[in-house]
Image (cartoon, rainbow, N blue to C red; front, side, top):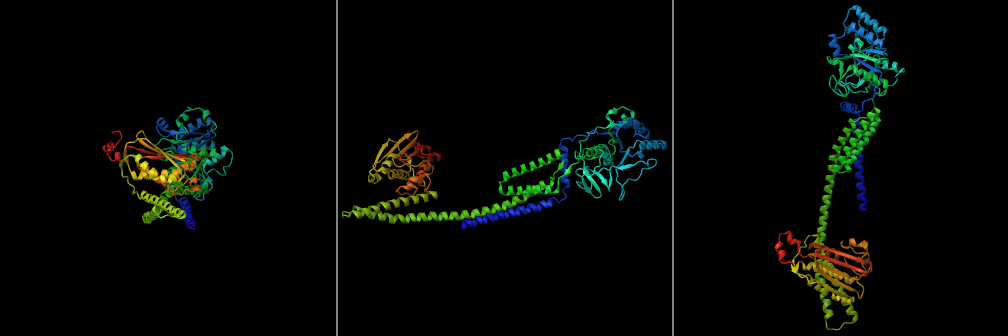
Length: 633
């Protein structure tokens, strides 16, 4: 019942954490997607534009620039007479359309020359673009001064993010229409495509206008022809035939002739002439970058926020940081790839910002939870330590208190057995049972006492030089009564050995445990062999029996405390399961080890391997003392 209650409490706490996480992700997601993060999002847009492969060109646009070479040859800006000669040469090449990005009324010339230019522009149906928009509730731009008043001028404004969006002065958008009046790029694109552009990819509304993002090519993609070459007829007419000609300035003298772009925030990053070519190509190829649906951004950001919260709460900090770094990298990579190959713009700023906010919010939250758990574990550990101390104290007290009455019982039983007054067979058997039972109980109490000493780290080696064969003989002599009762023969093959440092009492317990086990589990009239030998600086003592043996699956566990093999449990032999555990511990205190080889139905052989030079002395720097008792001195 208590375990079930603890499990339910744990599950309820986990549910609380996840409810907190989901609510946090939902609220943070809703806030982030409504925050004005245009500057940061525009930065990610610029990176995507700069790093993607260069889009293909339509091949239908040719730019002509009034450049520095033109100014050098003419000594100044080309005048009206120069423009008339330019148009005469250009029209011979049969371009499809000509767009003037220069105000013809600003050109120098006489009245007659201005009239000739106006007539020429009218007759050739040349489009005049102005960097302006119609006024409120107007669909057309004001007319140009006389004699250009009859020329139809079309809006071709240049946008710059100065007071809206990123507010960094970079040009990223173009205007499709304002107050219902389309720009010259849209009109020209519809004529060239022979279709109505009812909906442009990525189109969005802003104030009274419709806008879209420019599908930028790197600066210098549209290589312009020089105005002076065309005026002089030094050009290949085949390169112009059927194309749209855009005429503008590229002199680097006026900042208004240039714009900053996603490639560079330099004020002369790209000429307005090349910008118009980019806008017109965007319309001709219908490749304006499109923002994905807001619902898509919401779902993706929410999933990433939940993933971040899960990683922070459930995974180790180092691995969690690696996972979140990979998650951010994969998300950025997908966003870049989708933009590069499909022209879709996935929002990155709110998602990445949400990832960092979630990480730094839930790290302290996790620390609070872990500190709380640590405090709970500390309290439990304190309680366990107290319980362990109480258990150890109880075992000591019980062992000591039991030893005295047990000694009295054994003494009285021995006195009755050795008394000259005759006893009936029934009485004699009862007294012998009392004596053997009290002896077994004494051994068990001794084992419990040794276990409590081991757990409290109170067992210390009392090393003395001793012949181990003498210890073995004492143990064999002590066990003679038990072996005689079971009609067992104990044979010894003890090789003469030098004395070396051992704790006699501990090893006596080891050999007693092993020999008594061999006697208990051996068949009647069986044989037990006890051997000793020296090999490579070690003393090896082996005790072999012909008993039931130990099943192979039990062999790895027989030295665990309180463990008894299946064969032992099924037999009538009593035992505590502590003898082999204590034996292994006492042998390892001597820096030795104990091994077993057993076959079911054939018997077992236990081998105790002890080093003759004790490492406890060597570690303390008492090498000389060890040498004095060494068999090699």
